[in-house]
Image 1 (cartoon, one colour):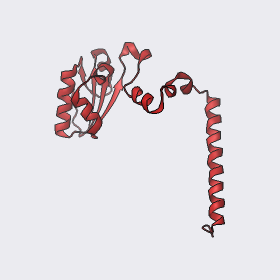
Image 2 (cartoon, one colour):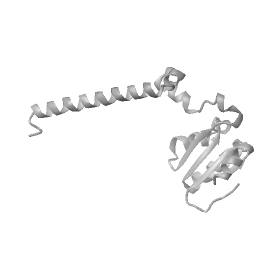
Image 3 (cartoon, helix red, strand yellow):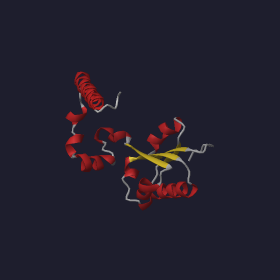
Image 4 (tube, one colour):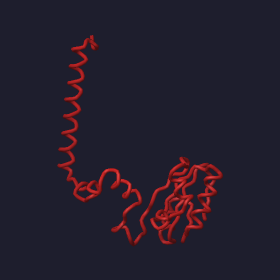
Length: 150
């Protein structure tokens, strides 16, 4: 494990090949990590109340670890992000996808919802701008009628 002398820590955990890249970026790394090493690290970070940005390879992020769940739910000084395995980036589905599908519906994750062309995106933005302008005009008219703007 590489360490840094700062108040906040940047840590990446996962397979060795992926961790080598994060080490070059200045992250502390824990290569070939397992659930036990994840739980030990999380226990240390919670007990020390240490601000940390923690990158977990997907196999660790999917762990059923109770302390991992507790940290995700309550430890606001630890930010956890999931990263895909090098050889699985095409089939990568982050943990948060399940929550998004549950809250907003699976259809929101379908490819056609994410693949707007620039022209389509600009058209949608134009519609939003027009709606905002219309809303502002209506609010101004109403306030003007009620004498608020005098």
